[in-house]
Length: 335
Ligand code: PMV
Image 1 (cartoon, helix red, strand yellow):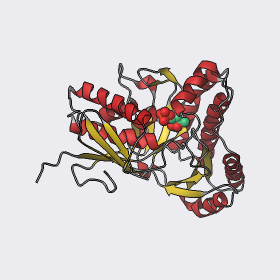
Image 2: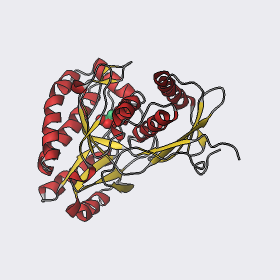
Image 3: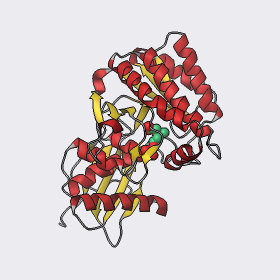
């Protein structure tokens, strides 16, 4: 029997309560602002690496990805090989997770799992910080899917060129559920990396956004530490809307929100005013993530599902971060 050369790892999406939007250094993938996020327990993406051919190749759920994504993955793998002093192209097979590029953090889970598998394959070690720093080079938010629970990525805490995301509170610190309200699964018009570059370079509100970020980050950390849903709602919804307002003021404007997105935010605001523990946040796409206190999940779910334009929901608890699975059989539907 041929030697099994696969390396497999899983990761789940994370989403930010205090947003990252804008880079201080594009090449070094250095965020301009600190962010605070929650790593979910699912849906898990499984990435496997096996010996490749002339170039790195990538399949998503059994289908070869388009060239832009393949080249982006290959650039990331080049960097991982360079850090490890390794060589040899690989075949990358990814299965599961969220639909790609719909603002559902699919790239975060993909690059976190890829970084975990690449680190194992090329001897970069097990250290969460090292793997998180590597994942950041694929997508900044991916660095936050490496550790579990409530996570911070703070450029003020960087060690030279190294910036890793770290857990500040374990997944069980606060019994909350995240309801993802899906309102549109089409691929987004403007990729987050392009959107944030345009915001930095053309939005008159970008400076105000950066100036507000440290205060929002500190207030968000405090609110999570104290399990203060009202306080976190004020911070998270403001961070979210400031991010979108700065993007809307670009030349040309970027609008990620759809009518149903806004309808969900209104429903959440109303539910909170009626005493339910819930808040909303929105990333670079139209879906809404609703964080709610465990005891209010049933009523918040009902409220979200009753909003016209909501196509469906997913529910996830905080999770433990990315994980190495070791060698195993090919994922289903791989070529
Ligand atoms: O790291 P990227 O390119 O996936 O950008 C993520 C940006 C947001 O999701 C909109 C905000 C965030 O902090 O995750």
